[in-house]
Length: 128
Image (cartoon, rainbow, N blue to C red; front, side):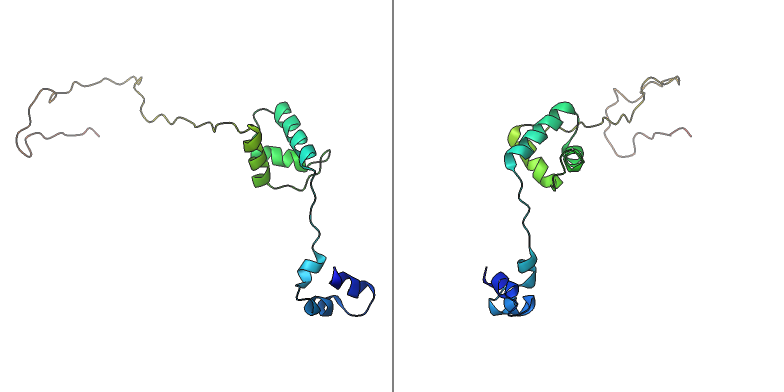
């Protein structure tokens, strides 16, 4: 890189070297994270096998921790899980809105067989 050579030879500053070659200074300082894809996939498979109920968030947290220390984000782990078939379906909770097994008496439907032919033919009074 030309800008790096100019800065190392102390000909000019980082800003001047980057302006000379039409580069942003952030590009000069950028250090890409190189991940070994095979070792990350192997670690992901190992953690997913050890914790079969973990999702992408928990597995990302596990892979960032001490033994591994991978600088990964959740979307990257989610993509790898999808590619390797490790994603599990989301468990949906069932919300029960009606309790049919209550101790209160049930009243019969008095208008069940009635044919309604005009407006305001049947009025229902609710209990308080």
